[in-house]
Image: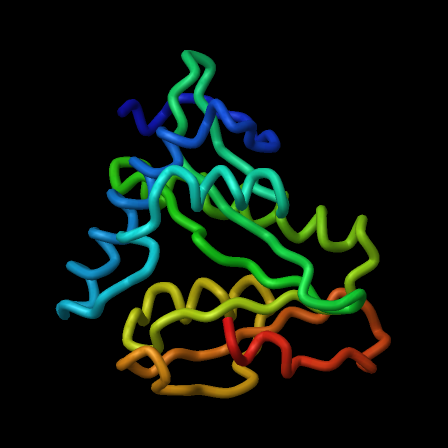
Length: 174
């Protein structure tokens, strides 16, 4: 893929399902290589129906080149009226460090602000240092860690308003 190609962000449709699956497999396979282990990640086992269900029930955004190639995807779901959760955030490995992830994350955060959420949460592996630094740079903070998936995961939170009366606990089970 051309790393200099322009791209745009839009809401996913069911027609995007196969390409989202390809992106998730490429991104999360690369994620496993980067952290140097063989954890079982649900992102690598989801099927087309799982993705279609997410598109129907949650906010799914894709990064697309002018020729129609999908180069990244991010999903957001409502956990409570005050809290959203970001998951299955991935960019095609050939497009790493080209701004795709930052624009996808910005679209997801803009969506959350527009919906009136007070905070948004996500998990990532604490040993994936580049991602940990990336989320800190995007004004997320570590709320807590867990080993429930077989590795140390950090629950990152970004507050979207000055009202800190949100309950983070629904994100614990994600």
